[in-house]
Length: 166
Image 1 (tube, rainbow, N blue to C red):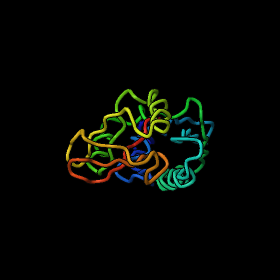
Image 2: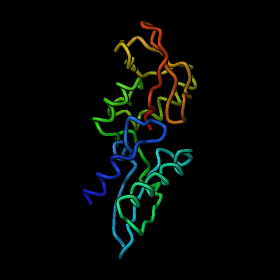
Image 3: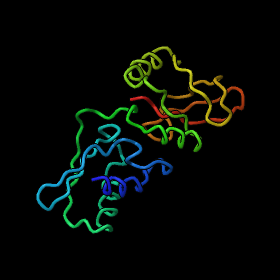
Image 4: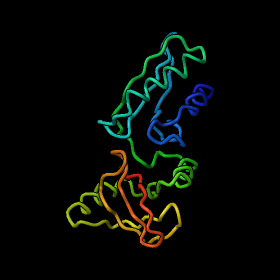
């Protein structure tokens, strides 16, 4: 299955093309059932609008490599967490201008997000991916895609997305 996983590691996330669907941690399992390859995918959240595009990209990539029979299954259990994003992908996000999720805050991220909505702020310290400053502020819980929030650096004054901890 390593070869198949390597092939899928070449499939970029449609919303963040600098990381693959494998790096994002949404390819959960690969298994053969007779002559059919079953790919289990856990979307970043149940309403992710990119799910259909991701499934199509998986089909195209695997059919191009000679996989004739393929089934893609969606699994919501366990739910995806930003802790599943590979370390290399976190650095790729930062280089692309997106602040990666802060390690180990996925479980707390949900709570912090709710607290932030109630108080109008956030308890997170998010480093600016452009200049590295920790003097940043959340502008909106909603960013360029549903899995990101809008932030701004108060030093370099650049806006940026923060990949929400889920």
